Image 1 (spheres, helix red, strand yellow):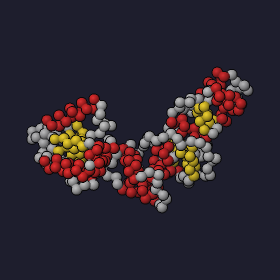
Image 2: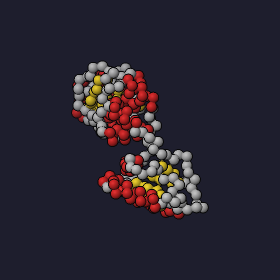
Image 3: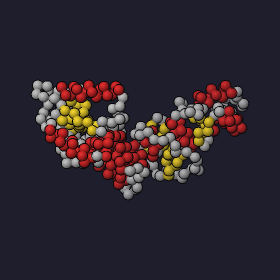
Image 4: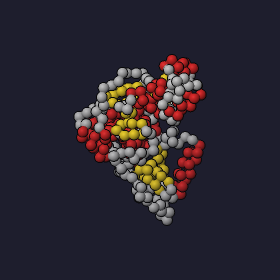
Length: 323
């Protein structure tokens, strides 16, 4: 309901803030007109910096707005028929942080007129294909991964699927239903293959380096270890049960701060006191010197086949994972 024929600035700002999609402060042109603002006044406020055009027919009250504000603006711009999808839905679900532009939306019918910063896809959407996150309509996790499966390489798709497992968003039945219904669509084969590569360790890797190290060992002729295994209060990256050998993935991302270095030193000293021996593998060794790295790991494993020091046992923990 309009506040007046020509409301004063303070009254208008108060009304807009109450009406805007909080805390992202976006509002449609139609809503501003209903509040009593003329098109000329809207343009004047835009020139004065009180309103910032966020999308066609949508304005924001803040120029330095969060990414979710852009998502809301894009959705409001094309109406209730639009669902956040593709890379934008990947971001909205928290699977991966993606660039804010372009904002991807999917509509079941015809595409609206194109506009800068918004990419609209046209594709049939069934109830199973859509959901709501942070009050925003978007494609489901399964449909989102199918949409991006044809846009990324296998390694990136594996990371996205692994992240879905880690976030406990993976629903095998939902993926099965979608892949059966969309059989033959681009991305189906890649997504089905990525799901087929899931194993008991999926969703449990903490870093890209650790993931690559585990894949390197898994694809080699080395015996299968356990990963992300707890030895007492310490979690180790790779361990062969009933031996004293532990392999850890060193990574600048996770092992560079003074506090982390101190924690690593304390952890290694404690494991040594219990009879374990730790072999650290650098990023370069994992990615650029793989043959010699595997040879060194195998020599290390064979040299430490004996169990840890008797009399100082560490009970195995039930959360031990194999691939």
